[in-house]
Image 1 (cartoon, rainbow, N blue to C red):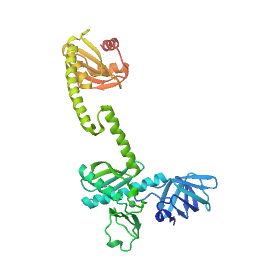
Image 2: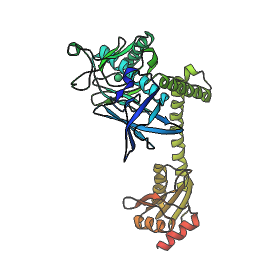
Image 3: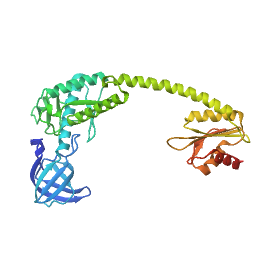
Image 4: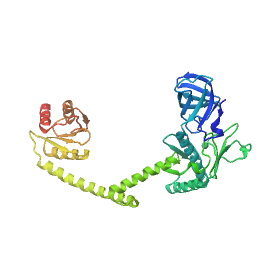
Length: 387
Ligand SMILES: [Zn+2]
């Protein structure tokens, strides 16, 4: 059994200990100490990373696990049994998890008291802090929850952990039926919950608390949150985004939502006008096109899939066979073939045998792409050689 120093003091960053055993397995050197401040993975909270030093040697600890109250540290080098080590936790990583974890308690407790919903899922990683609730929440609800959470932060209430004797009489949140000694974590006025993780000492150390986004999930709501430094980083980045958009649109930052909506309307109108103009242009191209031996070939820039098909069909109405190639700024040139006299799928395959690419379609119309660009003469030769 390893003495768990992280439960005595969750802010302990450095400690000394004696190596009880060190064996090699497929995950690395498995080191067991008499006592440790390294938190093992558990209760949704990822494990600590850090180092163990002895003499001039520094071992990196990359994983920590708890099995039957024996904590195993995975080291990148062997640390012989009996060695006195000096352990140092990667404090940025641990404090971030403590902020996320404590913030999640406050958030889940506030949701529970305001809406009566339970948290049925919690996923914490270096990037994400995701909580699932068993009831629907709207945008306005989440704003009200955020207000309440940050009031809890500003109240600067203690966060405590204990093993109360009257645990059976207590009302506390828990995701599963628990047995034996139950560790109860109280997060200010916001939450009472059974939990084995590490937490900040006060609610203020976990804040601010921000909800990033949410979605309907399994009949309830999945919400991503960020707490403490993560919340500040998130807000700094979104602030940058807002100022960048404001700069690009040359409008005050307070009006960017209206300005973006106005630009989107404008883009919609321009797209509609452009599609009309292209339709007319395509009709003019088709009218003026010249066929040689019944075959009409055209090469155009940047036609959308429906436009290249529109042009090819119009051309084929008056000529026996039409082939249109449209070069693209990105990706391979598109090809469309329409014919009243030739097997268009076979002609398409004949062309792609030389130019690469592929396609298909209903009888009389072939659509696809070619890998190599070609000029009108090359295409005409290919059609001619098809017969
Ligand atoms: Zn907890």
